[in-house]
Image 1 (cartoon, rainbow, N blue to C red):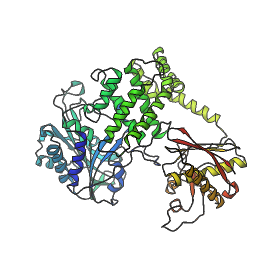
Image 2 (image 1 turned 45 degrees about the vertical axis):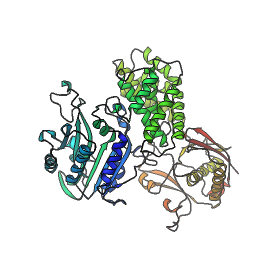
Image 3 (image 1 turned 120 degrees about the horizontal axis):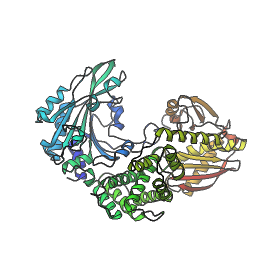
Image 4 (image 1 turned 120 degrees about the vertical axis):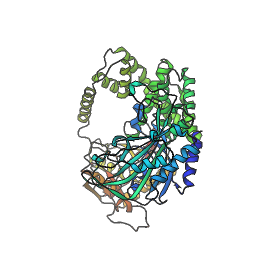
Length: 616
């Protein structure tokens, strides 16, 4: 069965049983510094599992695109991917174990048509804190699952809470047992290096976990004490890639229609066979697909946050393509290959899941990847030659490769592993810290807002950038965030995230609105608070780990009052027009700035624009 058919039938199956289909969450969580990506279907619904009422009711279903950066190193075998789709259904205090187990069993065996004899289930075996899930055991038997296909595991495998195992859960935390479903690929022989006997959680590849029902039924009340929840919830997640593999009795997810077209193109452009280089091609196909999705979602390569993960993916693609293509000419970037593979990735994503402008997105994806490849490609060959030349690579050399050639540590680790070597990571970290200290010393005395000094004029410019930041968000949307600034006595330069050129009308509107706010002569207040308190005010701005989150500096501009609830601006910021993380300095009242004149708006990098302005 094709993946698009399984996705469609899954949604229809649960809608017929009273579930409301919900829109999947965005994969990139803008403004949330705690989580870079949506990594499961449950993640956007945690507040509802904790008791908040969902506007669509108690029964929900969706297909959630997900990305797990922690799985990057695992990619290369037949089952792991970084980007995947999670099919999910939820009961928020409605049905529970019997209906959930009956329905998912019916869907898998009657709708998808999986062989019952190849399906195994697991249940929680219980311990001295929480009892065995006998109810699930009896339900599975009632559904016709043979006892030798029902397997019991402990808290490490069949217990869910946000904090982990029951002993690690704080008082008040909710959790419960889960029941997983595995598909057995009987054509794969068990290997003794993985243990004497094969079982669902064996790592030999014979068993695939395809779905997991979490039954949230307990709350921790004390040390080793639990009580039943008044609202018992069901959270089910099943991987579309794995459903598809099982439906085709294919133990390699990369041979399903979700990846195989990409693999075929990689074969074409490398003149290698998948059967000869499966690991390399899996990494390329997965990373191309993941990178394509992240770029469509608005991520651009950078050295921090989501942009760093994207950059890491693209550089791993470059190294693997380089190795498969057999040392191409210096600086050669296989643009034709990436254009074809990215186009196919966009088409795969478009197939029933995303409403995207295919041609426009394809061109954007290819442009971003090729530009990043071009930057990295100029040092790739030099770096690889350096690695082959060095007899023994230690932590210091690994850092030199990182500093000189832009080689990510994980890529160096992969290449020395092939040489049978290992790197002292503590030595690498020591060299990295030395570099950080030198950088801090070199920048000592500068203000965090990009000021070269702190004269009266520079202080005016710096305050104006705060107003400009909020104005751009008002005009262009909340996806606009500051990417950097540079201020001198002659001008201000402000970089911000935005994926297209501003129109002349938008530039004029921004200039007029900044000047209007300046003329309102807002009082500029500085307050110290915790990071969480600042976020409740919707504070914006550059924020990273160098700040002490228990005591952050916030600058607020605007009248200290709240407007009528029907008025949307200002109220959400506690009565202030601009609320931003910053270390200062600023003027006391915006009126002293006078006004600004925008001279130029231009591109700096993919998805980053720059405004140059002067005082008027």
